[in-house]
Amino acid sequence: MFNEMVEWSVDEGADMLVGETFYYAEEAYMALDIIQKAGLPSVITIAPMAENVMRDGVSIMDVCKELEQRGADVVGMNCFRGPDTMMPYLREARKVLKCHMGALPLPYRTTDANPTFFNLPDNHGCSCPAPHGRTFPTALDPLYCNRYEMHAFAKESFELGINYLGVCCGATPMHIREVAEAAGLTVPASKYRENMSNHFMYGTNERIAKHMQDYGDEA
Image (cartoon, rainbow, N blue to C red; front, side):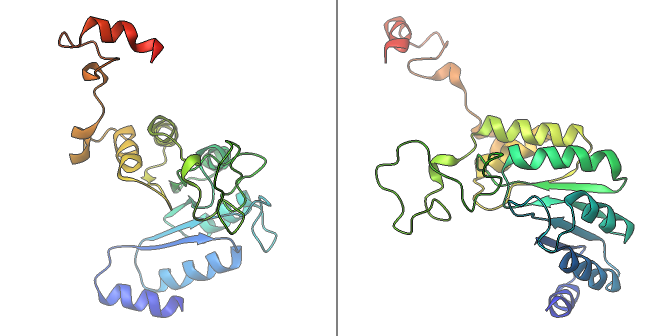
């Protein structure tokens, strides 16, 4: 399967090859080996399950170090985990890895008790839960990270020297914009950044009626 995908990508003129969402270490190693045979730069990002180890028992740090040793150009994590449960591993990996790193979290509020979005509970009194009995994959909406959480994650990642940045499953344009701006970029979507000074009740613009500004906290 990997051979076919790599061959197709090479035939279409790919500049680099990305292997992602690996939760078995051996599968990540195999993908890297086949990518390297194609002679293109390689990005390998892993996605550990809630056990906090790879499914074949290799620790998160050990698989990252092994991927670097095997010559991956970029090593990191993607998917399954939101910012709060991905960042601790990124901090540790950055201390030991010398290669480029990648970070592409989910835009959901995963926790230490539920490190991935597969069993993430909705603790906000949902009045109409999903018929299949879990928030994943169709009832995760109330568990979104806001734009400021995503910006903070991307900013810390960038300051750690992690330059391959993005957002994985569930990302909105707003999340992507926040990541780009956290890395110091101004992108076309930046023109849509909120301008609270013009808000009809919480704004500071001289056009905002004082009686509405005064009413704001009572709304």
